Amino acid sequence: MTEQRDARPGQIFLFSGPCTVQLLAGEADVVGYVHRVSREFSIPMGKRCPCEFRTAGTFRFLPHGIQARMEELTESTIPAEWDRVAQRIIDQKLRKVMVIGGMDTGKSFLCNYLANRLRSAGLVPAVLDCDLGQSDIGPAGSLGLLITAEPLVLLAERPATHLYFIGAHSPSQVMTQFLAGISHLLRCGLDSADGVIINTTGMNLGDAARLLKSAKMDLVQPDLIILRQRKDESEHLVRTAPPWIVERLPVLYGAVYTDKATRQHLREDSLKPYLRPESPVQQIPFASVVTDRCFFRSGEPIEIPVCSEPLLWAEKLKEWEGYLVITERQISQVRELEIISELSPALKARYNLPYPPIVRLCCAPELLGLQVGLCDARSRCLGIGVLRGIDFAGQTMSVQTAVPDISQIKIVQFGLARYTVEFFEDGFVKPSRM
Image 1 (spheres, helix red, strand yellow):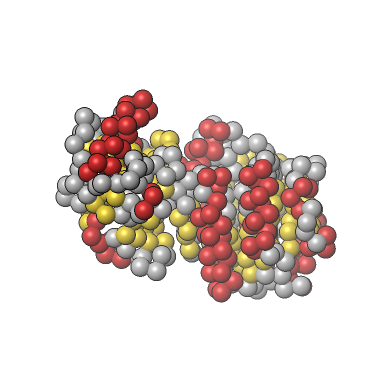
Image 2 (cartoon, helix red, strand yellow):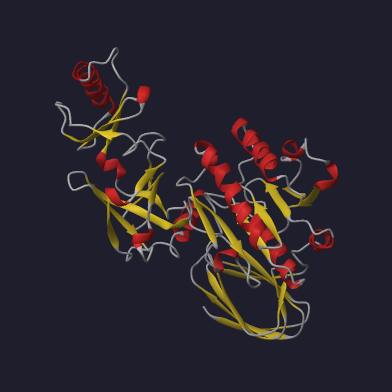
């Protein structure tokens, strides 16, 4: 139920989404910036936002679901240490600030707060979001860079200034592209802003996480590392960093656990500014684009071999990579092994090879709904799309996308994540499958 309330100076409220808050009168500090005019902002499910009134004021609370909450707090959720760190960044002109912490430690909120504090000081900061699964900047499955033109209540309020498509929700299977994307967007941020705040993933434990964080720090060479932790669970990640560049900020009130279902909802919701069910399905000829991050169309098409299973496509890859073959229907793993055993000696005999070649088998139905990145001739990401079909005979791809001018699309990057026609998550394709 909508509720309108008056607020006293110093009164603090914590809003939990999904809801909309309308600041009608007074001055209020919202995520590190004092708003002196009327302001409306929406908070999605799974997110929280504190609001501290500096003067007497009035606001309206509009809940959009049963999870929406408004509660009054007795003390600020923002520790004084945050302002000290923000002032250090300003005074020392630190241009690369990396925020590290586990899942649900408030990293995104801190990045947003610091960006707003820097904006208040007259600087133009950029925020680089490296969290593929819980992205606040750009759609899930992409790295996003936002160059802030104004203070923001939520980083997701504005579309990303630059995107780098990955096509997965975790960097564990795409580390090479992941690190390349960070390098690319970091350069964009340093070229266009006074500094870059880098929000890292919550992937902090395990051998892959340790290697990835170490490589990320080597790549970025941060001027400041902000460590977010409840106790000492992330200390192992900064053991090699110079002690004077590490700031430790404990987790604040309001950083709460986000369950698996809410995380999935937030990922699906992050697509909406970039791709919707009503977005048109465009026909993209094979001849007009180059495919990337896949075997498909990277070799030489060959005559489809005779096979007991209906086939749609076959091509010879480079040297020892073998052959890519695409079946018409979805088949079991056992059936796949049978087809490979059938095709490998047949291809060896047809092309007079000294040994049975590798046969890489892919099933056409599993490609439907695949998330793709759409880039121009200079590999700049124009947007994302979803593969809705491939006409192998007519040599065209059907891609649902909001990119306005498809003539600019020169590269189609294949991802791993799949989506239904309603843009709900629909599993993944294994790496190198295509």
